[in-house]
Length: 181
Ligand SMILES: [Zn+2]
Image (cartoon, rainbow, N blue to C red; front, side, top):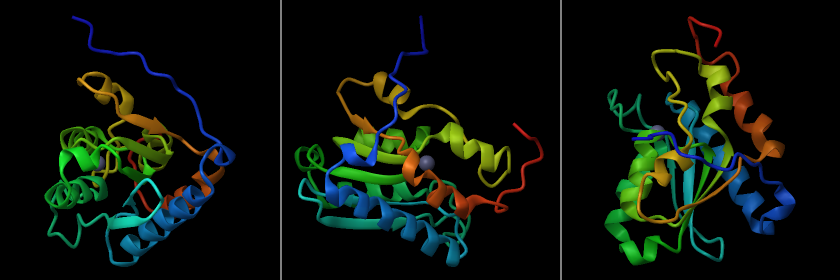
């Protein structure tokens, strides 16, 4: 059995997004900053409808959540959203995300039947900052590979190189890896 599946490793330019989507992604970076200021890890995401209306925002809560290892922003958001919206409704919504969802969060996105995600930076890029820091030893598995193992199409947009620096500067000197990748 072959487990590694093909995916298209492309980037997205801001000009290829709808005008309001840059505003949403910049808001996501603010959510990351807010999470960091609360003592959590600098990650965040938001959920929007097809017109760009923000339905829900979520920052990482692992630290203030008493060490809850599942309190990644995307998993928390999916838990909340799936209790509010039907699977049919979720299919038409988009998650705007700072980084690429890890395998756990990609799983939550899959089970929640979300239709589309837009991410600023790939896990492979984030890993350059986190290394193997025990708080966040980045699980570098492309979300598309997780989704490709499923039975439906989930659109993945990004990474968006023009916004990467604004997100990743929140991670500079934040992690303490023992290795250097
Ligand atoms: Zn995650």
